[in-house]
Length: 226
Ligand code: NI
Ligand code: MN
Image 1 (cartoon, rainbow, N blue to C red):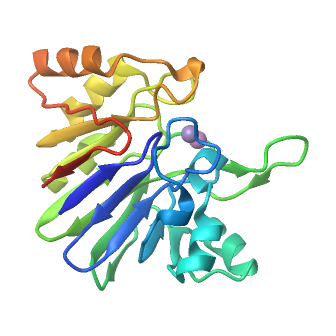
Image 2 (cartoon, rainbow, N blue to C red):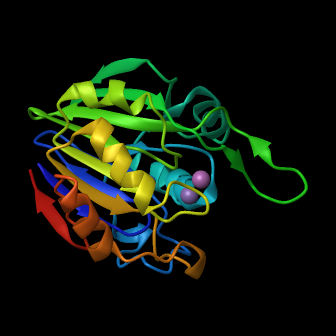
């Protein structure tokens, strides 16, 4: 399985059976090295409604025919716009042809279209993906929460965790999250896209290492093999 970081919280996961894109925010993402037009994907997974996560989901779905997998409200929103969708909710899992997806809790918000009339699209989620003998956890945007201990019972191969602070947990809480999640490997996300979420990923990796965890920061465009 190959996991490519596309900047911010966007990852391309290539399993033996399908290409999945998570939180496809490429257009307007200052850290992105790829454009939405060049992405090939079979499934689109969205953690919550914010535009730095939903981003290119609709356009990608319309171009590729890939269904959008997200919470029920986000799925209904995109279904109303003509996209193929699959709605789920936290705690629920579903077997797809490539593997199993389960949504988890996340502590955050989930509106779309900021301004005077934001649309609230259900609750924010984290995403568990089981495929090719690996379990991946994409935390979405979240605060640290104690129930990460339950998510940590999944023998995680990889955890993708926000470290940007301000909107999500920062590096200090992300190290505590690693204590709960115990993944074999973690990749930080949701940092350095804008000055307000500026972080030093090497310092985070060093701090996590002192606590006994393995963190590998990826540059946008960089990939790792599991
Ligand atoms: Ni958010
Ligand atoms: Mn965000």
